[in-house]
Amino acid sequence: MSRAASTRASAVAGQPFAGSSKFGALVEFARNLDLVQTVSLLTLVLTIIFGFDYWLFRIVSRICLLVFVLHPRSLRRPQFWFSLALAGTISIIVEWEQIDNHKYLLNYWLWVLFIVHLFAQPERQQRIILFNARFFLCLIFLAASAQKLSSPSYRSGAMFEHYLYVDSRFKAFGKLIGVDPAAGDAVKKRIMFLRSPFAEVEGNDIHIPGSDRARVAALAMTWWDVSLQLLIGALLLFRRRRTDEIAHVLLLFFIFTTYIPAPVFGFGWIVAIMGFTLAKDKFPRIAGVYILCFFAILIYQLPWRDWVLAM
Image (cartoon, rainbow, N blue to C red; front, side):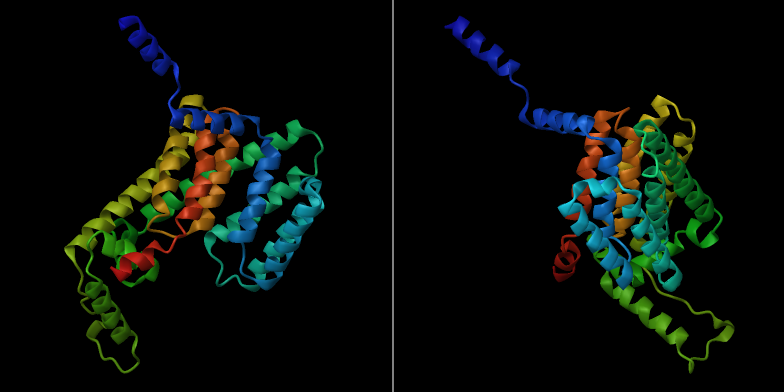
């Protein structure tokens, strides 16, 4: 009887945990992917769901998607990416006042893929795409950190506090962490009063009411955001395996946490593409987590903000 029990125990011990086996399959899947083709496909998806709003780009991106569905090898043609990059550039020129910063990054990346596909040699394609992925991640995070640290209103937490009060994208998150929506309404009324041409305010300065909870949350968000971005950019500069691994972990943490309160999903998608590009061959397990990132970003678009506000 004891022998039977020990046999069953050893059999159970030999069985892999279901979750780990599924993740192992995901890692193996990521390892076997063709880097350039996968990055190209992820970028095409990005242009469809988080691309430019200008009508020309929307038409061109959908035509490119249809062409890809009918002729998958078109993804490897430079003309394919030239049309998308040109449409993106025209969109920026026409609507430059309304374009978000991450849309410029998307357009740069489209031109990178155009250049990549000008070359037939896979080694040269990979060198170009790996160099640009690292370059843009370092540039994005270090430049953003420098700009934020140079701004007194950012360092004080005033920017995020303002967002928690008046930005509709942060309203649900503010309620979730305990910021009274009435505080935001009061702030909006004071701001509207200040903007009125009939308002008479001495020194053009008024006291805006707020809440201590919002101020503490804004300070936490401020220094969490800037320190994380500074670390990611700085670690990637060293080009060492250990520092790269830490940078990837921080970047994944940044993606999984930032886009819950801040619905700038296009930026999250493109930095996930760049992170996946750098991790695919060196860190297959981390590359597998980047694949999960894309699903997380899609899930974050659920109308949970409306659900929170309706509570």
